[in-house]
Image (tube, rainbow, N blue to C red):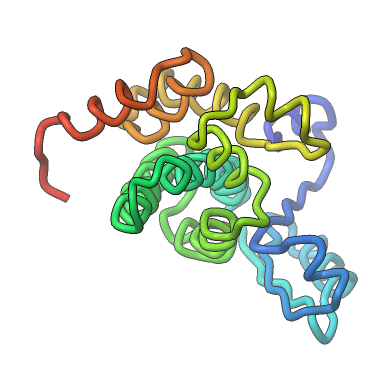
Length: 214
């Protein structure tokens, strides 16, 4: 989104706020820590002073690209995590999906100009932990309900919430193809949501891939 903003408003200063922050917890004034990414030091100081308080802690980053990639990819990964539970694949499968999924996020982030360090921060692993293990997560719920046999159409008709991963998956898959990045978990989720692959097809493809070094 920052690229679009720069094209539309070339003189604008951009700051991106992201991180593990369910709105209900912020509303309850529960302790929350997030990241704000900007390359403008004056804007950084203003944003931190405006947003920080006794329960809402803001950390600074200059990696605008990395924070945005994290914000999109954690939604995709949450759908995958929800699927593992909905399909009763077990805790081992979910842990493997998350670990390998983080590898894919790092590959994508570094390829498009972000930093690996950002992925292991609040906007990356912090948000992944929240979004991919909590049943309050909209994207996790979507994956879970799909795994339980509900159709995508029926889920969307019943829900009054937005599962951002549905939109994110198309854009991230475009970036994956454009830059020729190896992202099998992203591809698996894309095949389920967009190409209507069966779960058996996707699981078989993932598990039959050549064995490689980690």
